[in-house]
Image (cartoon, rainbow, N blue to C red; front, side, top):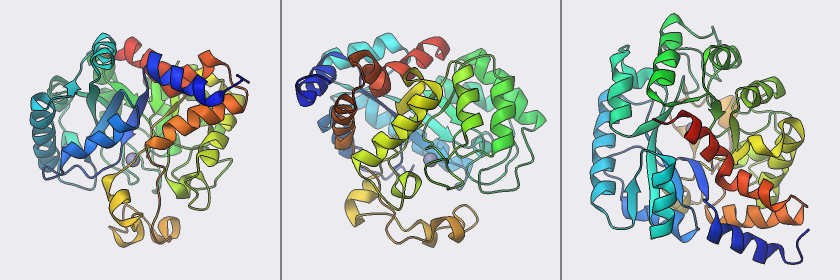
Length: 331
Ligand SMILES: [Zn+2]
């Protein structure tokens, strides 16, 4: 353990890219994006922002993407990036580097051509099915019927274009088939370990192992009911990092916090009161589901030093690992 874990974390945040692989705020054109400041203040250098998920109409995802692009391109201190070199340049300039992700292939409306359109607009990561089955595959809260022929075509198209295949929110069988089908590293952008917390949004050991075998990364998520009993402590996040590091190696672990501004406003989200088709009550029957705050990413680095991780390992978990995947995949 370094003599001073806090100083070690400070050096890491100064010298290395800090990467949050998924933001969870609602993809709505009306969102006040100046609140992205939260991540900058937390020392985060790169953030993947969700622009659409299966619960909403695909046309609304296009509108969110348009609004978010327009704001980020115009705003001082933020940068829409297309390469890892541009992420590094953004850090040097003190800017938050941003790309976009899509949570579910309903955003394609059944059209393979849409993958290239989204890629051209800055989407660098897409997952299959948001909790429920769709035209591409199975969701994690549904009777998973596997990767469809369309889903398989989309994987090939994502591989061709340079978009990261993300398996979070997706059913077990579909993820295993997708990782088998992909020619490039795959990720679980924000999925905790089911061995520590038995929730359907969490993933089993064979899924984490298969992800690592593609050269990919599993991102630990800050949502309390996926970490434990609505436990958003930094120690709970570190426990999931520990579990994955033992299972698949620290070089396959990252952070996809899933923080939403809504968490700041009300102290938590009442997911059980949303659409029960997508958030079944049996899985979300908790008042005020909490999420770890972006500032806890720094605390997590400190905690990992305290738990005797080496500097290179912590640097990888804090960003280097997801960055390695981006470097291999993005074009
Ligand atoms: Zn999500």
